Image (cartoon, rainbow, N blue to C red):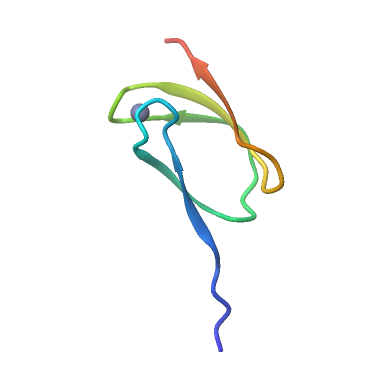
Length: 59
Ligand SMILES: [Zn+2]
């Protein structure tokens, strides 16, 4: 039997649009995220055991 990988959507904290499709164990460090819908830019830090950190970057 295949082991199911667990995934989830990281959503834009401003408008809620789906931004990144991540595994449950994905680690993201200083990732420059961009939301196409509301044009916000973010600096993302995501660790599986912690709350995602998201800094808005002003352009
Ligand atoms: Zn957005």
